[in-house]
Length: 234
Image 1 (cartoon, rainbow, N blue to C red):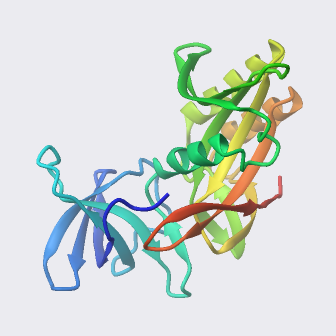
Image 2 (image 1 turned 120 degrees about the horizontal axis):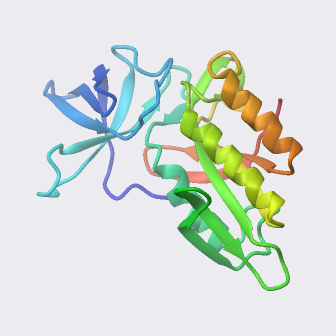
């Protein structure tokens, strides 16, 4: 997924009210950018870190910049925008690029199911059970090369796991797909200390037959693309 406009570098001043971030551009101007990330962003909101912003000239948008990336001092990148995984994965799913799901030819996003829920992707193919795919963006990193989810308590996330288990009980496939938006991680695990209830819901869902996929990303100021699977350490 290529960014629609060229990103510009800046330094973070502060992130606040969940969806706002004050930043200083290289020319010294201070601007407010939209932060499309409702999570805690633990470890990713320190003052002075280098960020990459996407400008826009859309008259309907109040904020003229969107925060897209963090560039770490070691040269690695983290994707901030939680809407990116679904956009990048849709293309990969439609092109049959996701191992284990490549046999499905029809990809439908945001399909209603369960109890007032929407599945990120419903995959269908003649002769195969329908596959319900829930996607989570992963950005938390507290140990070298280990990506973790979640970075805050997520009651909604636990509900999704329960819904997926129900789909398995009805004879469908259900897949929990974690997309790691970091280039400095090779393993994935659950942050049990942050949300024990989510961890318990995951263990129950896995026992019920819910599958797990974890995929990495290639990230640069030009684009974010799907990379290789990561080792799941749960």
